[in-house]
Image (cartoon, rainbow, N blue to C red; front, side, top):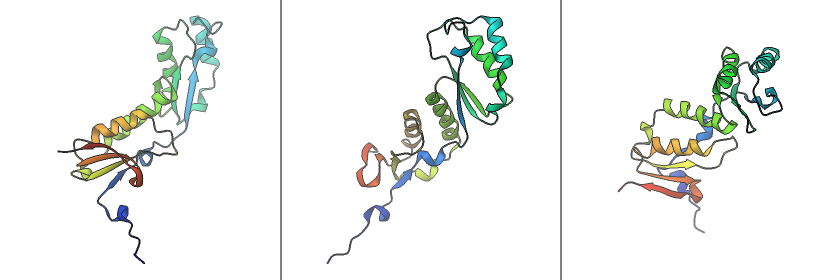
Length: 167
């Protein structure tokens, strides 16, 4: 009987797993619609009152996204004012959805990494993740990896989809 050989483990493939670079920490979201008059209009005095009464301590060391989920008349300064309350507490504050927050966090992490170890190597951009890795993170990673790698594939070694191959 022929011996079964694991060619994947013997190959020069390098796996780049975005999940390994997932920024650890609590994620929270603030939807300011609750602080608007009839969920439609910002009344400055009432809005500032809600901000004053709000328990900001719950955001200590959290990553926070801030948005308004309804179509409303909200001046830009309102979001900046919310951010000013979060600034001394939160690790990071962004305008937008939870996905916008994850994208921003990954941008910061990916900009700090050294990719030289991928030079002239076949790379697999691991596709499956148990953590919320946004599509933008994969695109940003590809932007960093492609100029260095000999080839880039997406997925798992057993079923990778070719994305790029240097000529």
